[in-house]
Amino acid sequence: MNCFALYCQIMKRKTDEEAFMSEQGLQKTEEEWKAELPEDVFNIVRKKGTERAFTGKYEKFYEPGVYACRCCGADLFNSTTKYDSGSGWPSFYDAQKHNIAEKNDGSWMMQRTEIVCNKCDAHLGHVFPDGPKPTGMRYCVNSASLQFKGDES
Ligand SMILES: [Zn+2]
Image 1 (cartoon, rainbow, N blue to C red):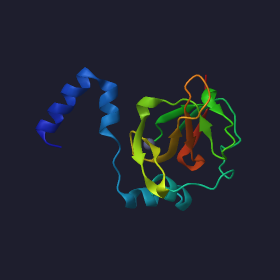
Image 2: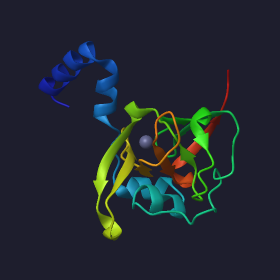
Image 3: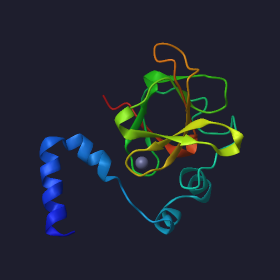
């Protein structure tokens, strides 16, 4: 890192630590991810795959705690917002939005909104505007993209 980049980082950190952290991201090469992750996980989080419905380990899982990014550990969802959508994938009506980025996804002849980890760009799933109150949103997430952290409080 050169001096100018370092200077910019320090100035940014002063103004907004959190935004700074999420903007920096966590950059690894595809090869590094591939070496680190099991193949089925790699195919979902780095290649935008989708696990088969009703097969993910968190699909029927309702312990209290936080769901973090499988790749980088960023907190993504809280168990209090998890619900059974009947879709076959873990579903949440709200998210830790500062750690999630939304992207337009026009694949499979559909217009959907992809959700990815804001820190490491891991593919998580999609968000749909057909969720329950109070948000009306449904975050439909692959179990393989998540790691559950139990409630430590
Ligand atoms: Zn991540």
